[in-house]
Length: 308
Image (cartoon, rainbow, N blue to C red; front, side, top):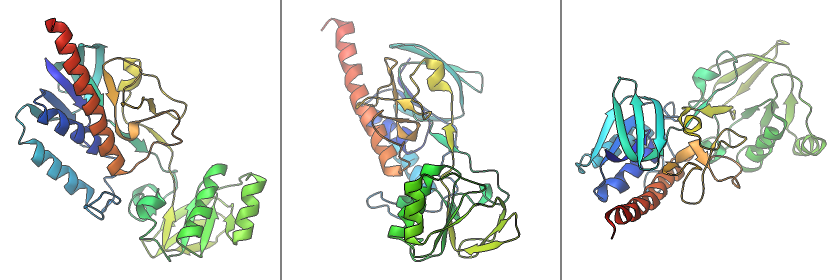
C-alpha cells in the first residue's frame, strides 16, 4: 500500500513527489513520458530557469527524486483507477495493479491543432500557443494569428499591442466577429483574411501561409491557440467533477470533488479561473500545493486511525 500514487511525471507530478519524498511518504509516480510542451526547445517565466530546455528540467527533477528512497518513478501508463479515500486501486498497462491511500492526477492536457497541412508538425516550434511563453522571442516579427473562434481574435489585438506592428488575423474560413472586436481590429490596422488556409510551409522567420484563393502570406511566426482535451479520462472515471471547458474542478487545496483525489497542473483549475494556465512554473506550484495539503490530510487520518 502506497501513501500516494502520482499519475503523471511532468513538472506538476514530479514536484508533488518531491514534497512527499521529503516527508518520507511512500510514493509511486507513474510516468507515461508524454508531456505537453515536448516540441518546445525553451520554457520561460520559471525563476532561475528562463529559457531552459523543458526536457532537461524533467531530467534534473528525476535525478533529484533519486535521493529519496521512498519515491519510485515507474515508466508506463494507467488504464484505470477506482476506490475510495484510504484505498484506491490503480491498473497499469503492463497488467500490474497498485494500491494507495491517496491519488494525485497530473496527467495534463493535449493540444489538438487545426487540421491544416503543415500546422500540427510546426506547433510548439514556429507556431506558438501563448504570448506569455513566446511573445518576447517574437517581438518585432511579422505575425499571423490563426483562429476560427471569435473571442480568440482578441489574441491578434494582444500581440499587436505588445510585440508587433505587423499582425494579420487568419480565420481559416468566414467568421462572424463581434462588432466590438471587428472595430478594434480595424482601428489597429489588423488585416483579417477569411479564406481557408490550404497549407503552412517554411520554418521560423520564413513561414508561408497558402490560401484557397492562391494568396501566399509570408510571416516570421504564427500564433495558434489550439483546442485541448484531457490526456487521460481517469478523473472522469473516478467521478471527479469536470468543468464545462473540460478541466477537472479543484478547490484552493488542489482537491477534486472526490475525497482523497487531488489534481495538479493544466489538467485542473479553480472554477473562477478563466483558463488552465500552461506555464511550467504554475504546474510545478500546483504539484507542491497538492502534496503539501494532502500530506497534512494523511497525517490527520493516521492520528485518527491510531486513536491518538
